[in-house]
Image 1 (spheres, helix red, strand yellow):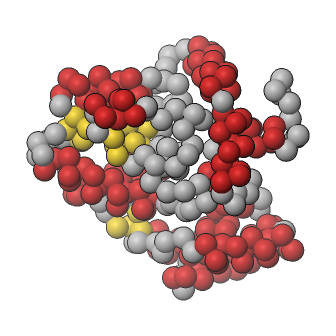
Image 2: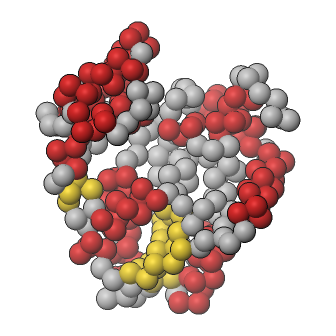
Length: 260
């Protein structure tokens, strides 16, 4: 069985260029491990490969869902394993490249069989939070799942919401389900893991700043404005909490200026 190459590292570390080089050298196809590239229409701020490159080298798990939809690490692991099996079946090398470490962990170590996201239930939890505040919901979580509550801040809205959602859908605490991890290691098969770790953090931060300036010049704010017209978006959606999109949203709301 051909090993899957797992290429990971921080933003602006050069993962995409390395993935393309490896794909060309070893006859590979690329699986995106990026929690922002899964969203349709979010192109500039996620630095998606262009259509020309995607036509030359097959890419997977890009443009999977709309920015209003939910996508979990467990769903990623399922979709990635399916893509890996397909790539291997044609004698190609799977190259998984990205910076979403939770996705890598879900794929390599497995996750418990958690229920998928329920949009209606999440809306109900959000409505309660608006009335009572997230600390109150955190206190409720502490009563039903003290282990999970102990590792979450009372203001960690996204994780409190998920823990309560799991409790209502599965009837079991999130911590109990996570204790019964469903391993995907065997399905993943052999791997070659490569971590890009820049030695100069200052230069990395400069590269990230240049990258963001380039995205602004390419029309990131206009992209977010168009997404707001096309979809029923809110700033608390995971898609709009992505780096770059969160700042563009705040700019459009008049909360910050370009200098900020």
